[in-house]
Image (cartoon, rainbow, N blue to C red; front, side, top):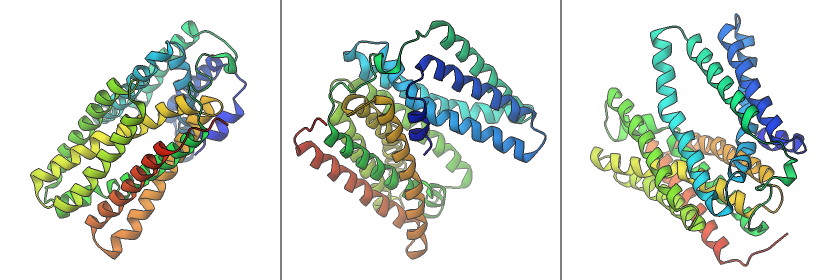
Length: 327
């Protein structure tokens, strides 16, 4: 939620300096967290990391795609998303394993070292220019109506996804009957499906951006409603779980790509707005699931989430039928 105000506050600062500052904040906060002698110091350090991350993705997108020709921007967004997904799929288990083999402070120290390498690379190689003069500072096809449509659909999609995903452990245990040790394996499968979905979608993002977004949201709806309808069958549940996982990453990736295309103003502001809307959807989804769970059962959270995702599909289809509005 801090993405938009932070991006607006730094809108006039050259992006090279902003990225250097953000990476420096990551290095310092990670080192402080590793050396923290009290809970409150650790909390402050992690909050600093969270704020830096909130601004990083809003700034990094336009900077990265601006280094390439417009026709390659879809592939660049895909590559960024694959890298982000790999960080989650591989980085979290690697950090957990490293902490188990040593102390919990060691992964934080390693993170600080990786951040320092990135900082030196950005400082040495990225050119300095005024933010409004960068190649990807503005959308390639400004459309305020489609911009609003994508924001609304992305928020609804996140709400739908996390209405169910928040309670996925309970669902897989109580409904599908998987033992706890198998649920851990299914989480890895979910992550691999997410990475696969991002990789496949990235290949089509440049040529069919709107179709890629609509397909990702529709696939999420099918996965969630399939889990509700047939989640009591373990094998079928795994299939629909992978469909849901294969859509979750691409939904956010495709909305980010659309921000770079249809932003009616600066793309960094549009990306920050999209990130904030998506995070608001995550919070709303968890709240929706929490309201549904006591009224029915955990299957009902996936029905509610699937129906909200269907509403996101309807918003997108409606937006596709409306004429473009440049404003």
